[in-house]
Image 1 (cartoon, rainbow, N blue to C red):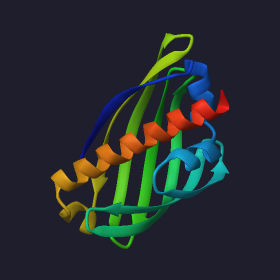
Image 2: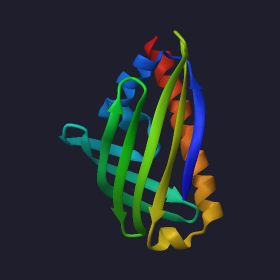
Image 3: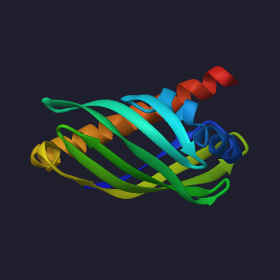
Length: 148
């Protein structure tokens, strides 16, 4: 499954970078994430509860941040397992500063699904991915506004 999108955020690139490198912040704004624990530098255990169409599951696995180019880009590597299937994803995230108070975040990557997740259907999964992306960016905007 392809993952792509972009969103303008009312914050400088360095501010966004600092927030996105904070696992507590990420856990707070990422839909479904209930906990993130640091395993080592740039490697985290993530617990998530996600509903995908008629299917709901608890996921547990690793999130790793690689290919860091502060404050412009990084890659998220995700390996999650659950009773309803597994997810392996690689997503490249780019931050482009548009002005001192505004930046654009672009993401592109691929997710491979197995088990019941893979059988749920591309159309349902694409809709869920779009909804989760929208919720993530709405939460990010709200958190930034609270900090200003």
